Length: 155
Image: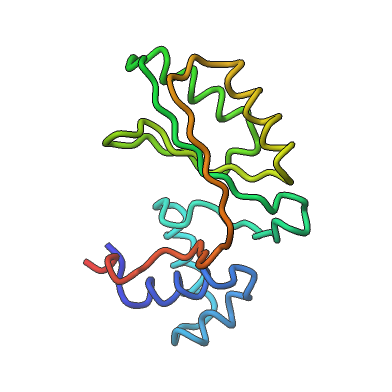
């Protein structure tokens, strides 16, 4: 389980993982080496999965977000694996979830424009049999965060 120091370190890393370990250690009350060891243990334990750069979607021409709800009539492992392979091969899909309830799958897709979405849609439906596809275009991003809430992480 995580202790208070781990959580402090994780909060800092979620905000800016490029900060020097010495700076992080100072902020949490540790010297550099013990702080580095904690970060390494968090990585080894899989708590820290990777460190990435977050890009501005508009500046990389991927500023249109589309939420796609998918229903299928095929509820078998073969179809699921083909679906998983298809969406893994489509870079526009940035998030994908298997859902409970009325919708079987929910995708978050980013594209440059409506024409980009249409091209994506045609590639998607050419790979799989899908019973129903419903798309909703995001009009405004009101909140976005990659930081997970850490109040649940304590033992």
